[in-house]
Image (cartoon, rainbow, N blue to C red; front, top):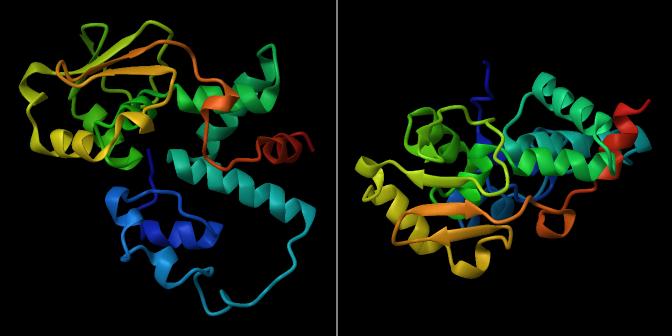
Length: 208
């Protein structure tokens, strides 16, 4: 499947906020949003009035880029969320949060979602004791995600865990640092998602 291979910082500048696509770099002074907090391109510093459709489109693009998902897959998630009982926008966010690559990132095993996606593809993790190398694999309540035996002492994982405090682990996940594993205590709710997302704009966009 095709993926965006351009500069990650360009995406943050386009959306006008830090999407934390490059891990620790996003927290340092090297972050592009610290040095050039405006959209990329020659017209980036111009103040253009954004209409309703533009706001909806930008919100959808922002969420896609946060989770690293292409348009076709994102639209598929929306269709599932729309058919599921409950609030469509909240259903959509729950689907995105329950992806295996996102759970690995939220547990602190990787500094960014891009790296967690790569680790999952390279068979670094087990789900309930079995190998899963599909980043979009949907986790369920009670699932246990753990690093493979040969990867539990990998320096990049230990460094990532060290930089991630326990207060940064969401309430719906339980991390066992010694065992290098995490358990899904509950499915994520809207209150658990701290990222600035206006999901109603996405619902309005796809409902036209």
